[in-house]
Image (cartoon, rainbow, N blue to C red; front, side, top):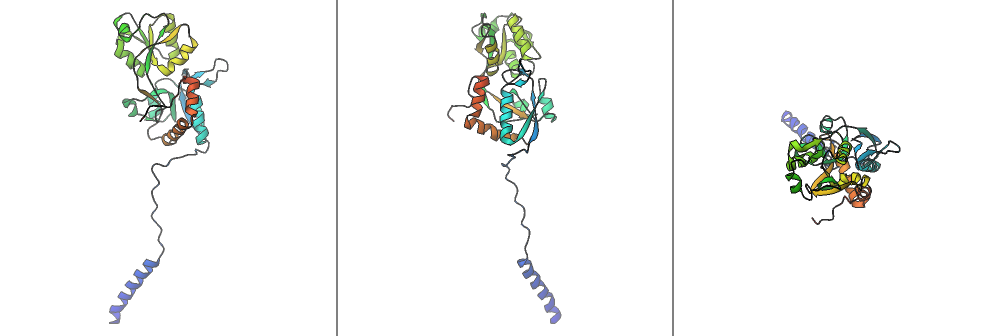
Length: 271
């Protein structure tokens, strides 16, 4: 009988000790909505063309980079304790971003489904439309007038949504693509082209620079959205989205947009 009792006693003692022992709790998974709010002074590489005013350009007096991109990224990094390092790039930037060669690019990039397959977007910061920027001596009042003239040519930049809008209007044979937007503007002013397919918010700088020679012509599209881009899975996406939303809410973004784009970025439309 004693031999039979001992194992039972050991079993009871083990159960009691197990119930009284302190166990390490299973760690709770971090909230997936939480993200970094302080980058600890980390440098963030920002791609800019420096040839796409008013988003990015070189100040003719100082040769320093200026524009919407510079102001917005500096403000975002002020809020998140990071340091923007601006890197001059060539368009298009999507392969560089997909390869992780840069942390982010501004450059007034339109949200498109095919682009979202290779890069991540921020929340959009402005809704806009594309226009045909034209010389003030133009004879075309509507898109139909322009399209009907087989001699009318369009200046654009290859690989942009502006080129896509021009293709839809006049076809490939009547488009002249330029490596940089300022070169296309020079060609338009010289009469080599009759219009330039361009984002309305980007046309502002050129029309301001040449008020007697350039004007906003007919509309090409509406309801387009601009956003920042990142490499896929970038840890910047969440924190930058929060900073952008805070800037829209507190008026900082509108102040920067009024300065460079001459319009508010925040929307007053009802949901």
